[in-house]
Amino acid sequence: MERSKQVFSYKTEVDPETEIIYGHVTMMTDRKAADVPYYVISDEVFAVDEDSFADKPGVNDLLGMLEFFYTESDRLLDTVVVFPQMRDDLIRMEAFADWLQQWQRYFYLSNVKDIGFIVSHTQPESERFCMILEELGFEEMLSSEEEHQSFYFYNVTYITPVDFPNDDDGAVLQSLKDSGVDMSKPREVEFILLCPNRRSARKVAKLVELEGYEVDVDEDEEHEEFVLVCKKVIHLTHAEIVKHQHDLEEITARYEVKIDGWGAMVD
Image (cartoon, rainbow, N blue to C red; front, side, top):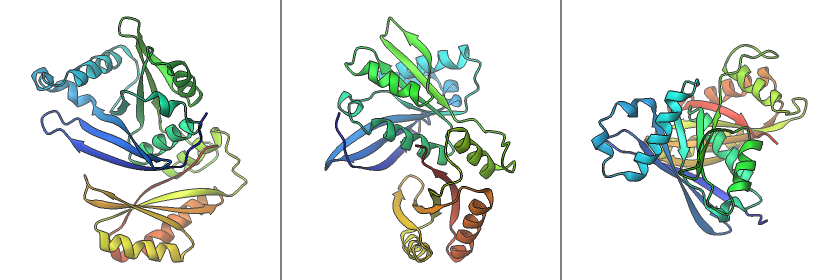
């Protein structure tokens, strides 16, 4: 297995005819760039005239699989991120499972709760790919011997907190605890801030860094805003999470900043 250092960036664009979002994760692995394509598809796409997909055979095949999933499954979907292909050399990387978890976290913080992977059984690393997906909680929802592929699906449902207050923060904390995280130990937490322009993003980044956060800044070209990922090691208690979000709101009040959720890595 190979071990690699990586940096991620996410880019998307919308097809105006079908409203399907086309995107890709770009990873820098040992100074080499690797693009992993994905689609963001809502159930409304099935109301679009089929002629709109006449010149998009790959999308047609994808929608055919998803439509079967929508109609035959008892699960309700709103919007799902679908990764239609994965390179074998990436699957072989020792850090591959960690990457998938980071992508799950990114889309969760972007309010997309459903993620699907299409696995081709003809590729050499398909068995390893399926094993990793199952270990991360993905279920095989559809499988086609004729098309030699399966659809693995993961849903991040809202968890009703038992050990924490019944709100969004409590739900995330409950999810972390249920995943086996030791809540008694401090852990790095990422708070996501959205800034309207580059100038305010720079100012906010410096202000937040003065409060002891490590800050990464990325530009979201689609939404014409800047995303700040503010990292700090804190105790995973409801009071601490609420306090840090409140403090960040006060620090950034002058700059039209929106706090867009938080998350923590699961071991």
